[in-house]
Image 1 (cartoon, rainbow, N blue to C red):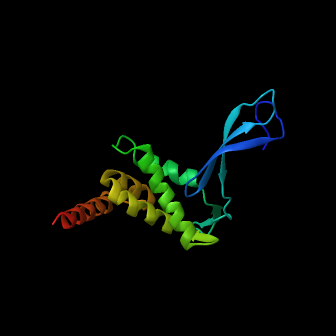
Image 2 (image 1 turned 45 degrees about the vertical axis):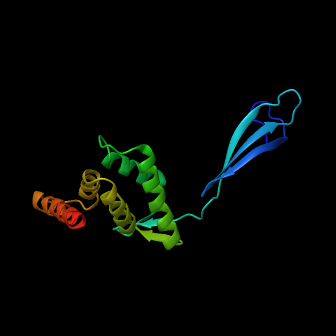
Image 3 (image 1 turned 90 degrees about the vertical axis):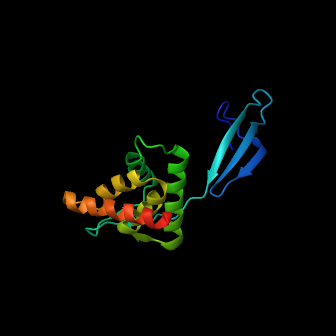
Length: 156
């Protein structure tokens, strides 16, 4: 690993920590003139996963696109960034576990809505209204009533 400060070709690892998806390494430059410390992150490069849209078009899965949609649904709600990132991580992990090369877009949407439903009802309805493209107020109201009935059933 090349030092980002002096560009010396040799550095050594001082400490390594692993999480599920990333290895964090603290490094130190071996140059006697520099000896500065820095952090690197190693992430496993996954094979591309294509999302099959409703019209049959395919595009590469974008965690950032999913994250933006979930953040938009959670605006002005008491939901932390960590909770949102955990939700997106879980959806991505499930999709990559269940689908090797291609995944239908509706699977990603349904998994996201399932997780949002348990996290926050308002965020769920916001996401569902965009995802399911409600055509009228009646369809929207049916979705909200379904959510209310589900919540009542869980409380009993």
